[in-house]
Amino acid sequence: MNLDAIKQVYLIGIGGIGMSGLARYFKHLGCEVNGYDRTETELTKTLVKEGIAISYQDDINTIDAIFHIPTAETLVIFTPAIPKDSKIKAFFESLGHILYKRSQVLGIISASRFTVAVAGTHGKTTTSTMVAHVLKDSGYDCSAFLGGISSNYGTNVLYGNNNTVVVEADEFDRSFLTLHPNIAIVTSSDADHLDIYGDRSHLLESFQLFLDKVVEGGTRIIKKGLEFEGQISYSGHEVADAYASNVHVRDGEFFFDYQDTNGRIDDIHLGIPGIHNVENAVAAIAVARLLGVADEAIKKALTTFKGVKRRFEYIVRRPGAVYIDDYAHHPEELRAFLTSMRKLYPTKTLNVVFQPHLFTRTRDFVDGFAEVLSMADNLLLMEIYPARELPIEGINSNWLLNKITAEKKRIVTPEEVLEFARNEKPELIVTVGAGDIDKLVKPLQTILAHA
Image (cartoon, rainbow, N blue to C red; front, side):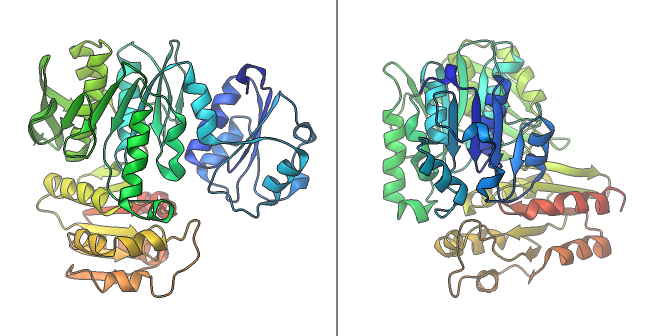
């Protein structure tokens, strides 16, 4: 496929975070971009405002005639999450279009560039966004395809004037195997996506295949303790090739020192909270130093880093009320998030609103979820968000709730969460999950901003 010849692009499942990034990329290149998604969201509304036509009906009559004839100028991209019985997908196939996965297109875009790819079952979105911000803010520059909306730039795709591209490398559906990185980071390899991989051994095999894709002379940066070999190990809490030390909180902000074989960087102020984000920053600094970015420029960039939407995002932060929203949907992500909350607010009652994501993930990690959610002082547990799955008998939020030892815990509806906020006016509350729990963010913000 010759990307330079493309004039019109149709994306099936355009509302996904990765797909929307490609939509913006091709729109930036001047292409006519259309797409379909089953649900209207804030992200799809933003895409429409940017001039991208979107249909929310799986109806072939909504497809513009310019996409009916397969040519070298037309590109059709689909997400693996799209249902197999999608009428629009079947229509394009019947016309003779070659349909490309998002990962295939991303692989083609990055093939001729110096690629920094960040993989991991968690931590990859913040780390890749942090790497991109350090390179942009320092003047080194880069393009980037991110798995979340950067709070600094208000988008999930960045355009640079050099040949460097930062890519979030997604392990779902083995998508990251289309990449050939010059620098590869692996942040974590905890068991996840077992509906795809079956067991952790197959997940690890896929990560090793990803690392095998690193080009000759390239660099593998691996979190210390993982099963993989690399040129640089890193850690946020113990000695490694690159590591953080003297991690502490001052006035509600995280500070740390950085050390690697090239020397120290002292008293780095991280613009976002979280012990786990200190570790993410260590990986980002390692990349920046490899590329020759000056230490002072790195420090400045990390101070100004505002994070990623729905990753430890402060929604309300005022005397008497703190409300934070986070995307964590795996036990280890939850552990890192809640541990940081305890470090930041050790004397406050921690109210946690959590929405489990997927029946299979809840089933596979129920004991881990139960252990970590028991860290809450008061747990408001929502029903499982099914996403692409059908219900599994016996796997529900009540089953999970019974395993949780938190003193206060109950199943709630979205309206009951809002009612709790109105009546109790909590000093500290968090919403956590990867489903549609984000629909609570604005109403909760309205309630708590002036409570």
